[in-house]
Structure formats: structure tokens, C-alpha cells
Amino acid sequence: MFLKEFQEEYINKLLTSTKDFINEKGSHKIVFESPTGSGKTIMMAEFLKQVVDRKVSKKNICFIWMTPRKTLARQSKKKLEKYYSESSTIKCLYLNNLKKNEIPENNLIAINWESINKKNNIFIEENENEFNLTKILENTKIKGLNTILILDESHHTATSDISTKLINEIDAKLTIEVSATPVIKNPDALVKIPLNKVKKAGLIKKNIELNKLSKNILENNRFNSELSSGDQFFVLKKALEKRDEISNQYSLIKKKINPLLIIQLPDVKIVI
Image 1 (tube, rainbow, N blue to C red):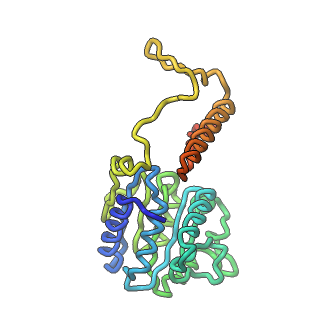
Image 2 (tube, helix red, strand yellow):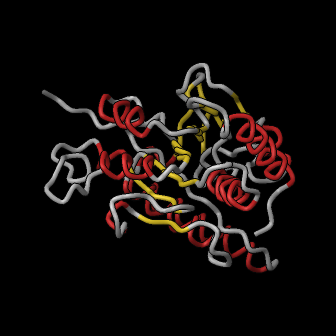
């Protein structure tokens, strides 16, 4: 896969920061602040590959990739596996794929906060087979591996009590928070991609047309749309139709571009 010029630039900056810390004493934290739509997962995939290929760490290394939800963990793992499909640099697994209660060298374990934060989680609780995250982490350290922890979109759940406890227990040699809105305060290094670089590369549109699907009226400083009279399924149907229309237009000019439809869901309100 071809990377954009700005992506290569900031992968190299991330590598430079990693080289500064990975072989030093103690644990270190890097914030990789990158706008939504900038290709964070692909950049991290290439970054991790180069960490292994260039032997940045003097010790053997393994990776833990933490995501907010199970669906995102699956998507990230699938995307990473596809990226590494032509090389055997890094192997991507889930915890239950481990054959031993340790993380092997150059393996990446995908974990999601959603399942970790559940009570009676089998990978958190002690069991007779000693197959739990605590023991896995302990055995990995005994093997002398340096662990790099990637916190993907950590602003969602990484601040919960269980999540904070787990991050402390992992005690990674290097923690990298990857987010458009990071939560780690006072990191050892900040690698930040400016929004204008992403726009210049064409990954994010410079302008947005609001509700182009319908007739819109601005009257008395109030914005009204024809879509307001329809239910959410009507709006979604119109949006999907527009996405398909744009996709077909790209196909006609032989452009391999898959338009993204973003849906913002309302916060769930729990009444007690």
C-alpha cells in the first residue's frame, strides 16, 4: 500500500521518538495525535513493521493493541492482518488464540476495553489454568520482551478504573496513545499531525455541504430542512442512496474511492 507523503513523514517522527525511549530505563508515553480520517491504523501498521524490521528495540518485542469496542478490535485486527499479509513481520492474535500463557515475540494481541471492563471476565479473573491476562503479562516479562502498548481511541474508555488498573498492570515499556482527541497528560513526546496536511493530501474534504439531499431554508436565523419531517430511517435511506450515487460516479471515471458515510449516534441516556 502506498502511503501519503505526510504519513511517511509522521511515521518517521514516531520512529525517532520511539528510538529515544524504547531502550532507556523506565516506562515512557508518546501521544500520536492524528485527525479523524488521516489513516491512523495504516500509519501505525507501517510504524510497528518498521520497529521490528529496523530492530529499534535491543530486546525482543511484542505489542498490545487496545480498542474501545469489540467491533473496532475486529476491524483493526483485520486491517492490520491485511497490511501484513505479504510479510511475516507481525502476527495478529486475540488473547484466546494464544497457545501458551505468554505473548510471543513480534506478536500483536488485540484487546477491547468493552470486554475487559465487564465483571467476571475470564481473562481478568484468576483460574486454575493460570490463563489470565495477569499471568500472560507476567510470563511475557519473564521472557524479557519489551511491550509496546497502543491505545487506540482511548478517550472513550481508557480512563475507567478497570482500564487504568490494567494499563498500570501491563506496565508497557512504551505506551502510544493514538487519537484525534488524546487524554494522556504530559507525555514524554507528542507527535501531532496538523489538519491542513491531511486536507492537502485529499484524505479530508476542505468543505462540507449541509443536507444536500434536501431543500434547506434559512429563515429568522433558524435552519430548516425537508429531512426534518422524516424519521431517522428515511434520512438514513437518503444518505445511503447519495453514497451509492457518489460511488457510481467514481466508478465511471475509474477511481477506486469508497465514499464514507458517517452516522453520529445520540448518547444513550439511562433513567434511574
